[in-house]
Image (cartoon, rainbow, N blue to C red; front, side, top):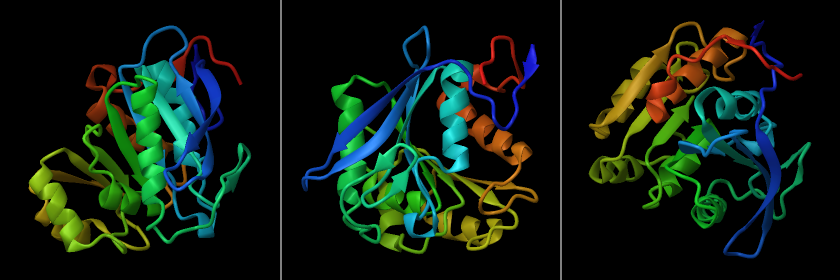
Length: 240
C-alpha cells in the first residue's frame, strides 16, 4: 500500500477527445474512465478563467481525473473551453466572457449523451461555476458542484432558475476566498432553497495544498457516488 500523494496517478482508461460545438469549433479534452468497470456517474469539468491561466489541467480538475475513476468509479471529462490552451492542446475560437461558452457546455453534455456516460454532474471551478449556473440547466444534468463560486457573472435570475428547477446545487466555499466568502455565499444562495453551502476552513480560492484537494474530492464523491465515501488515502497498485 502506498499513500496517495499530490502527484499520484491511479489506473484508468484515458483517451483524448474532441468536442464539436454548435457554432463550428473543435475543443480539445480528455475522458478518464474506470479501468475495469463501467462508470457509476460522470463529472463534466468546467475550468477556471482562461485569461488568468485556468484550463482543463488546473490542479483540482487534473487530480479528480487522476484519482476518481479508480477510487470511486466516476468518469471524468475535462476540456479546454474556446480559446484555451493546455498540455493537451488548444481549443479553437476565442474567449467569450462566459457567453459563447454556452456552446462549449452544450457540446460536452452532448458528448456524454452520445457516448452513454451515466449521470452527468457539472463540476465548475471559479469561472467554471458561472458557466454551470448560466448554461448548465440541461435535462441531462443531475446537479452542479461549485468550487469557489465568485457569482460575478451569475445573475439573480440565474439563481432563481435553479431554485425553480429543483436539482441539487453544492457550493464549496473557501473561508479565505478572494471573491466570495462563506457568509456572503450563504446569503446569495438563499435564493436556491435546495442549495447547500459547505464552508472550508482556512482554504483559499485556488485550493492550494493536498489537504484541501482531499476535502474537495471527498465532498464530490459524497454527493455523486456516496457509496465510495470517504475516499481512501492509500492505493495498493499505484502508478506514477
